[in-house]
Image 1 (tube, rainbow over the protein chains, first blue to last red):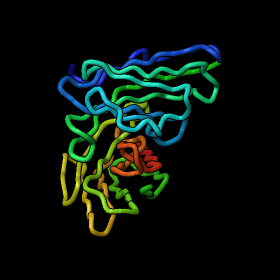
Image 2 (image 1 turned 135 degrees about the vertical axis):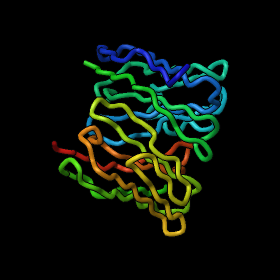
Image 3 (image 1 turned 180 degrees about the vertical axis):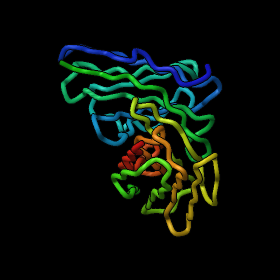
Image 4 (image 1 turned 90 degrees about the vertical axis):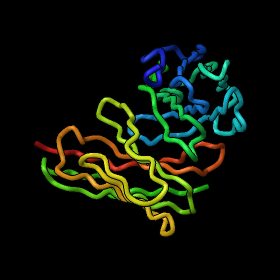
Length: 115
Length: 109
């Protein structure tokens, strides 16, 4: 596609429910990233995929968070048993190659509110 | 992990003014990226600049990798330049870019 697409744009969920966030990267981009931005804060790195593989999952905040990427394209970030501190904007980015050699392009994010 | 510091944290200017934003980083890097987050939250990549100087319209950026800093210049500011400017570098583990805390720029008409 023309840009990185994320859905839904907004999600309100009750504490304890599971949510799934989706990211569709720019066509042909092999690298995909998930970040989290809390209100008025900077960007917190969550996870990186090269192709379908995530070499290091240590950036995920807790074991309630998981992510996968299939077909070298679409990625989903799943949060189980959501907590109020999970409320944030979840941003996805992609790059042609890894971020050491290619610029990152971000989607518009999913604003998650846990009530 | 690598530390990224941006200054100033906040900047308020009148339309038409020029500004310089600074990004210092604690370790050697092989690239640096500047982003603009507009008031609606959209993050736009401004520059991918490992070293040297690049220009794009009223914006330009210079990275001096050997001295571990980068500068973003905005000339003839417009209200649409308002937002938060982030710099980001590789490092910090887990293969993600590490972002600074940003410079919050407000351009007043």
